[in-house]
Length: 182
Picture 1 (cartoon, rainbow, N blue to C red):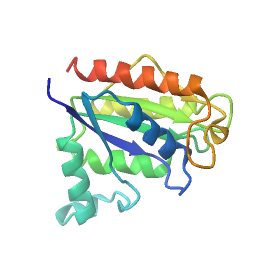
Picture 2 (picture 1 turned 90 degrees about the vertical axis):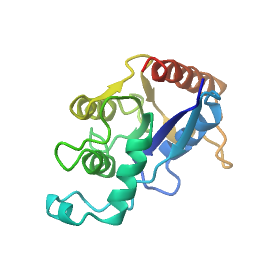
Picture 3 (picture 1 turned 135 degrees about the horizontal axis):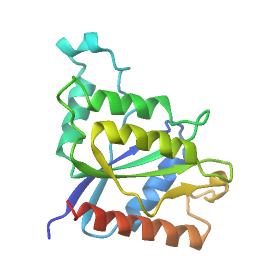
């Protein structure tokens, strides 16, 4: 069985982003059948159709990475009851120009986190709505809503709770099974 190449997108640009820490933890926990790589999105110019005649180099490189991936993991914070603008922009850049969707027909999964108890549930579901249109086959179960996220890691960015680690391990293992269904 060949390894599946998974693009990991983190919807927070903050240096101490909990979502980046969660993504890195999942990368460490991933089974050998997956090759996970964080694909940076902070450098992408805001999507503007006028730029399509001569697209920015960052768009071209991003679209290439997205099209070469076998699947996607999305880690989103919840800002104002929705996903971050930078993550939405990445979806738009990767799905355009119209008719040249680089995301389509591949498996994905969404994990959300927030400082509150609900773990970014609204951001998670908002992002899932976009997945329908860009044709990413989003894993339904288990869902990943990580609450009280600012207290999950110690000063060395190690996950403090074994129960959270076990959940993340079961989530990435389920995703690996999901990927190989395609």
